[in-house]
Image 1 (cartoon, helix red, strand yellow):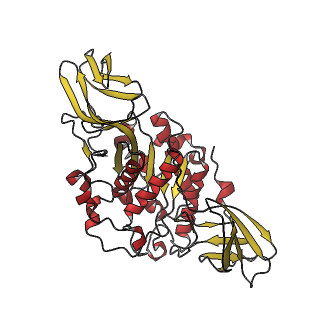
Image 2 (cartoon, rainbow, N blue to C red):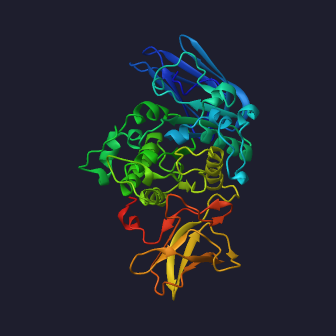
Image 3 (tube, rainbow, N blue to C red):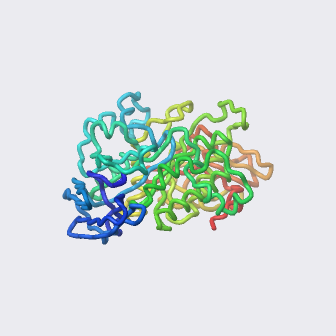
Length: 456
């Protein structure tokens, strides 16, 4: 059997389940699971596979028997929801680190430093991808684990806290697969041929080792049915001062992964990279400025124009601008879970902070419309921080901002003919625009990527 099929796993409910493995050529193989019995014969290369009819949710451990010339028993299998999480070090960030970090400044977000000691929920299962062994036959059949003890110590904190929230709210088993590499750019997670199929990259040589991690760490998972993807990556590409290029790389990755799993509508939820002092970093390749990160956030946000995507904001989740690995991983996981609960599972829950949509100008005011902004009327005309306004000269100054219904009205006495507004357009954002307890995504109204980025 491949590594991804083992005891302790969670199989995706309500979808046909692929079961596959390796045998001698022409060997007869029989699978028994959950009242189903399927038979097949290995091909001339020894590969075999069967498809189980869609499985119903089951929190009761079951056993799968695979019989050929030998017999394999996979035990303690549950049926529920399965997600794949991937990215670089902030996604890989291990649960064991929570016990060592200082107490966070934002006490409202809690601090589950003792989560490893408390984690005893057998309905959460984890699978940590070993990049060197994923595609090889597995003779131990124990690569999935219950989310506790030593297995959980080495697992993605974001992935675990996502699974914890989803499991708690849905009351069904959750399996989470983590496949991440610290320091990785986005290109290694994309097959070279996928770049060739995206018109933006035609006649362009793409660097950073395309396919280096996709081939050993993502592609072998693609037969395993899942509900969706979670993505937390971008810092490495931000250091390269990328903007629209990164948007097209994300688009290419999403299209490739969905195609690999054979489902063009699989949810893809991702994390805005957290605030960091990029402008203070030295680079011999590019010039990093105070606008490097806001422009990168803007590129990340373009992906929201693709179907079944969602981006969570983290612009309030770093206590130190010099920390590339902010500690609030439990809140990142929770916000991703809110996105999944609201968008994928249709729960009645708020899952996003305000997202800018359009502007209109009235006299000295710029009136901004948002998605996910609850109705309210401000008590004063300077309620919100983080807003800046500019006239035709393009020079931004601090602005007054207040809420009127579901709009934000922005102005300054110094600018009689306003043209543009921006919010949290800095690598050290301090804006206080929230809705549903979740922060607004940074934006600028004169976004050049709106017309440059093509979704089809």
